[in-house]
Image (cartoon, rainbow, N blue to C red; front, side):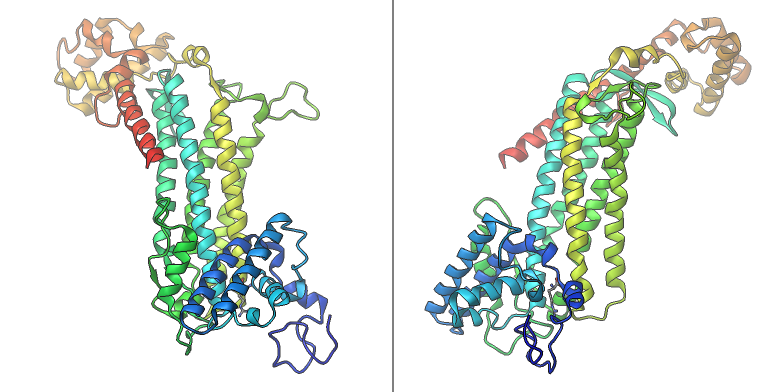
Length: 494
Ligand code: ARG
C-alpha cells in the first residue's frame, strides 16, 4: 500500500488523503475482483474493440494499438493459464477492469495509459455484462435443448406406457407417459425461447456511453460495434452480435434491464425444473413406484440402511428458491437508484453469476437423471384400474348417445357411487342394466347405453379414443413426438 500522501488507486488523484485503498476493510468492502474476474475474456474483448475504434478515430496511433492488442493478448493467456492465481488481481484495484488496465500499463507503459480514452468503467462494465450474458444465454439454451432431447429419447422409448394423470394430485384421466414427458419438453423449450428472445436487448451496445454523458472526443460508437462483431465472429457461426448502439448514454449506464430479463428467464427455467423435480420425487416414492432413479442420483441415509433419497431432485427443487432470491435481490437493488451509475449496481454480478451457475448445473443434473431413469410399467399398470380414470370417457359416451353433458356427468357420478357401494373398483364391472337403470332414472332416457359402452371403459381403450388436437392420449403423443423430433433435429442442423 502507498504512503499516506497519495491513494494507492491510480485513479484517485483528487484525494488529499490516502484514499479508499488505505483501510483494508474499505478495500475489501468495495472490491469485486473476487467474483467479477470471470468476465476477464469479455473485458479484454471489449477493450480490444475500443482500442481499434480509438485508432480508427486517430485518437491513438497504430503502434499504440498494436502494443495494446499485444499486451491484452498476453494478459488473456496469463489469466487463462491460472484464473485465480494471476498476480494481476490486486484488491486495491477493485475490479477486473482496473486490474487488467493496470497490468497492461505495467507491460506497455504509455500506450496502455491511452486505452481508457473516451471510456468509463460505467459503460465498460455494462458492455462486459452484455457480452457475458450473450454467452450465458447460449450456454443455458444449449443445456435446455439437451434436456429436451433427453426427454424426447425417453418418450420414444417408454412413451406408450399408459398411466394416470393427476389434477389436484388426485387421479384424473388416463394418459400415456409420453404425453407427460412432452409437457416437460414443451416447458423447457419455451424457457429456451424466452432466453433466446433476450439478446435483442443485449444486442444494443452501451460502449461509448461513458460515465453518464458520453464524450466530447470524436469517438465512433458504430465503429466500436463493427470491431466488437468482428471479434465475436458474429454472423459467421450464425451468432448474433451487436445490432446498434444505445440511444441514451444515461439509460445505458443506469440500467440493468437485460440482466433482470435474464434473471427472470433463469427463474422460469428454475421454476419448471422444480415442478418436474417435485413430480418425479413423488413418482420415485415407494407409494407410487412409477420411476426408478439411477443410484448415482440418490443418496443413502446415515442411519436408515435401506434408504434411497432423491436428493438431487430435492436440490433442484430447493435451489429454485435461491434463483428467485437472486431475481428479487436484483429488482430490489435497482428500485431506489437515481439514474446514472451507482455502486449498488456492482452487486448485479453476484446474483447473475450465482443464478446462472445454479440453473446450468440443475439443467445438466436434470438431463442425467432423465437419461438414466427407468419407468416401471408393471407398477404403473397395477394401479391403473383404481380411481375411475375412465369416468370422463363414459360421460363423453353418454353425450354421443344424446344425453346432455351435465346430466351424463350426474349419471356417471351416480355409477361411481354404485361401484363404491358394491365394493367394485371399475365402472366396467357394472352390468349394462345398471348403466341404463341409472341413466333412465336421472334423465328419463330409456336404453341410453348398449354393449358398446364397455369399449369406452378401461384406461387402455380411453387413451386410444382422445381425438382433440394436442391430446394426452396415444395419437396426440405420436403426432407430437414426431413434430418435436423434427423441430430439434432442424435446430441442430441450423
Ligand atoms: N466494478 C464496478 C461494477 O461492477 C465497475 C464500475 C465502477 N464504476 C464506478 N464509477 N465506480 O459495477
